[in-house]
Length: 253
Image (cartoon, rainbow, N blue to C red):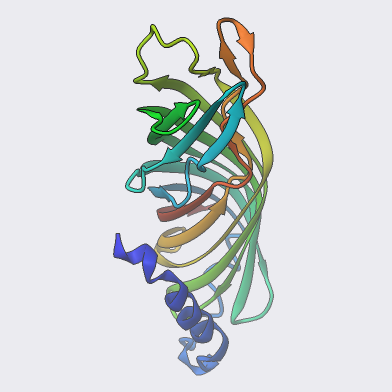
């Protein structure tokens, strides 16, 4: 997945392309394929890679110290979505697509190491849990036309519903001083930034490929419990960042 690492410089090149390529690249008869088809329905399918899932946490609890260190850097998930949009013509070159969308990111796995104890050397074990997310956005896509190609930049703002669930640890059951964490769903402000290109394969149908950087906001498990007693500790992080690569299909009404 070196594609994700190279994205920042790629973003700069495409923005330069959108801003400075001459208008003469437009075909004479291609004022805009979108003028007569202002409404569209889109579907997306792609790959999502979280960049910072499972923030490391250390906290005292009674006489003991608990240190959780995530070591899962290779987890990938599927992202799928649907959108309803309207296209506004700015001029012969630019159009603005606005709409609402829903996207779902499937299970993203968190795995890490747990160290606990009163003094060094600490008892060492492992832990794991999963995260999925539903994202609801109001979004805008600024397009520039080059014949049947429409490079664009993208912005979406809204809310993400993030669920953390199925916490487990390899600590033996007879060591009952290890917290167990409950499932939890958190609603948080979310945004998405991206870029890509759409291509019209026929007058009312386009296909596309796009990149999006997504901030899903706050995500985490519920309060820790030991022997049916809440201990106040939680495994949470304030921002979960995800890189996505999406294939897109748009049907214009």
